[in-house]
Length: 275
Image (tube, rainbow, N blue to C red; front, side):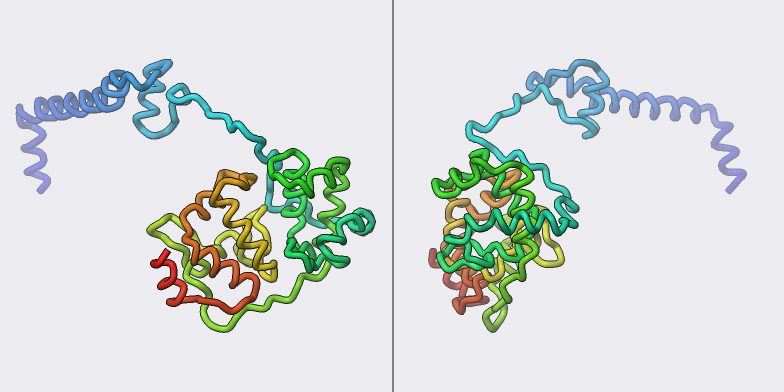
C-alpha cells in the first residue's frame, strides 16, 4: 500500500488533480456563500462577510424585514425560573392585608366560589405577572383594572407571596386516562401536551397551576386565547395552541383540570372529529 501511495504521489497528474479539485471547491464555496447570497434582491447585506455568515446560517439579516410592533399593549414582565422565590414573612403579611380587597371574588382564603380563579397555592410569579398585565392593560378586565390601578410593584409582589403561601386546593382528577390533548397534545397540529408547560415537574415560568380551577373559567380563557380576546401570553404560545384546539378538546381539557367527569381518551378524540 505504501508503494502504491508513493507511486501516486510521484505521478505527474497528482498535483494537477489536486489543484483542479481545490479550485472547484473554492469556486463552489464562492458561488454558494458569496455570489448567490449577494445576487438575491430580497437581501440587503452590508458586507461580503454578512453574506457568508447568512448563507452559513450563523446570523439572520436584520434588514430583510422590519420588526412589526403590536398595536396593543403587550406584557412587560421578564420571567426567570427563580423569580419571586423565598418571600419573607413581612411580605406575606403585607400581602394578606392587601388581599382583603380580593375576597369578594377570590374567596377569603384564595378559593373562589364565583367561577373566578383560585389563587391559593398559585405560583407567585404567575400572580405577579397577571397583576402587572392587568395594570398595564396587556390583559383586559373591567373588574381587575381599577383594583390594580393604585398597586405598587411591591404591593403586587406581596400579594403574589401571600397567595403562593396559602395551601393549594386538593387535586381531584377524574377516574380514567386524561384526554389526549392533555397527555400527548396534537403533534400534527403543532400542539404540545398541556403538561409540558403546566405540569408540576415541567412547569414553565409564568405557566399557571391549573388543577382545581373552575371549569367555566378555564374554558373561557381557552376560548379567549383562541379568539384573540386575551393576548398577554408571551410569544403568543397560548394563542397558537388554543387556535388549533377543537371545541371538544377545549371542553375536555377544562373538565380534566377542573376535576370533572367528562369525555376523555378515545371518547374525546371521537368527539373532536365531529367539530
